[in-house]
Image (cartoon, rainbow, N blue to C red; front, side):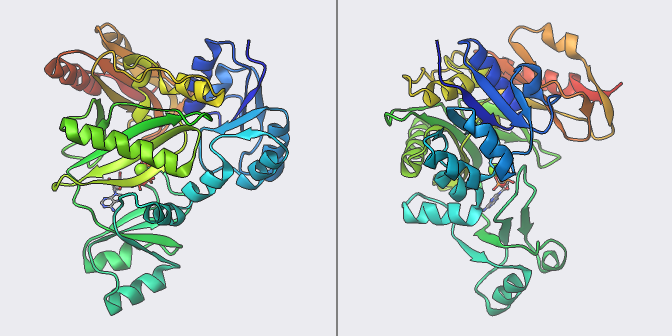
Length: 381
Ligand SMILES: Nc1ncnc2c1ncn2[C@@H]1O[C@H](COP(=O)(O)OP(=O)(O)OP(=O)(O)O)[C@@H](O)[C@H]1O
Ligand SMILES: [Mg+2]
């Protein structure tokens, strides 16, 4: 039915889940990543081994596809620009990707487009930060973010006290941001097709663990007022329209105690904060991506149940062939949906899978999630 081949740069779990959604419609799909053993390689036979950061690899791969998309931002955009020139459809466009890949350009984009974000300035290196602190242009506390290459909090350093200036500063081109007083971290996924139609998902709220300062659960819909929900969704739509991007855009936001909503950053691809959409929404973010790439009508984003998503991370003490402890106990529970990415080896904090818990009762929902959290462990054999 679908004649146009979709090529995806990156063959990890986000690619795998996209492939599973695409297979349902028999979509011709190809991947480019280092090894067929990666998660997407297990579910898609057209997997080319190569390096998506290299011009030649991306260009050669893209020439054999009609529509090209990504599951990771760190791809070679020079090759994507060339492919666009030659008439290929690339979503997100390399122009948008070049802005988003650089946290400095991203922050400037929000200012230029009058989208709310925390105050910031750009610096070249550590020396410039120290000078600006000395002259009072930068004041403690602040957040330093490497402009390029950060992910999962790597490349983010919070500088609170004088001694942090010695130990925690990175010597790289950076964004220096005000430390925001965060009431809640929110995520909103929005999707847009070439006709300019958009669809936006209910807001997701990150729930942090009290001991470790890590996100423990993602809850959707978020526990915010109807007004805040409307604002967050409208902001996500405004953001994707400002970028003029097609495909998915995950917009990470901060809600402040004063009720202000600020954009932290965006990701123009499937996102962790949309995993629950497979089990708890009318249309998953992955199916939605396929629809948008083919410029089809977008699917309903309505939730079929409130949901909590937990990432299954490798336990800190284990390294080696993976084993999922407590798997049967958890899968026995109604509304507990376990997703295993298919990585053979576990290592500390590696993302190995996720679980979506659904329940119409908020207390039951949290109780089940807590049970899964303490029962299902990623260890080695
Ligand atoms: N200006 C800020 N004020 C306070 N906290 C912040 C600020 N910027 C970032 N943080 C905190 O640091 C976290 C990581 O920041 P950010 O999302 O920019 O980095 P990242 O490496 O791209 O992370 P990830 O890949 O997990 O999204 C945020 O989720 C938030 O908890
Ligand atoms: Mg982030």
